[in-house]
Image (cartoon, helix red, strand yellow):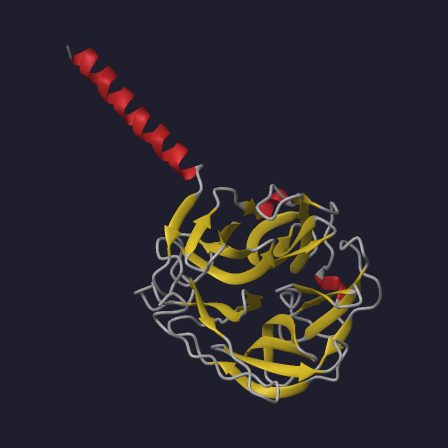
Length: 325
């Protein structure tokens, strides 16, 4: 009798574990009713892409448990939506250690499409070259699976030591393809950099050039509206978001001031700006689902962005309702 009961309990435990694993391997679909979009896990550093009538959001996973005052980030997660209401979190995640030359730390990233391929530019810690590096992965679908496109880092810390000696300046990649087809990579902490990319999207096509911006810290994002290019970025610390404008992607950039104020309960601020079905969306993170007051458990939110008649941007109003009311 005892052995039978023991076998039954083991069977039930195994069944529960198997069910949990199966559930974790399935996509999760939900309706967002306000900010943050996802409230059941911590996500930060959102980047967004519009492709074939769908918005894709790529975000780093702030994992728990972890030390209260540190990031534990091993993977990036993918969300998608066709209406900015019903979202799917895809079961597939892309892990930092899938870059064999990296030792982890899935920091900020961005995905962009070119010629039917999807390129994921990421920040990771290099295994043999001290400091942060930028890698690039490629896939045939915006939801993966992704694989290392180069077998080596695209940007390493030793490539920018003439501008700053800190080992974490080569972070937060953002990519923009201009109207003439030329692709550009922007990135940097304390110093903003940019460089042209070859059409294959995995090699630089010229020198690394610095951009001097007042109050610049990190998290550059490039977008274009009308005849204006916009370079938004995280500023100072704790971070607010500021922006600059130019009629040319190569500058000069004119600083325009604060775009988004301090994101409460988060010491960082990171943004993506996209146009989708006639509206401009400002996607960012704050600390709205973290009750413990540390800045390392973040939440992805979305609010609307609007322009003034002269092309400048109205200051973002962070709301609880978001774009879902």
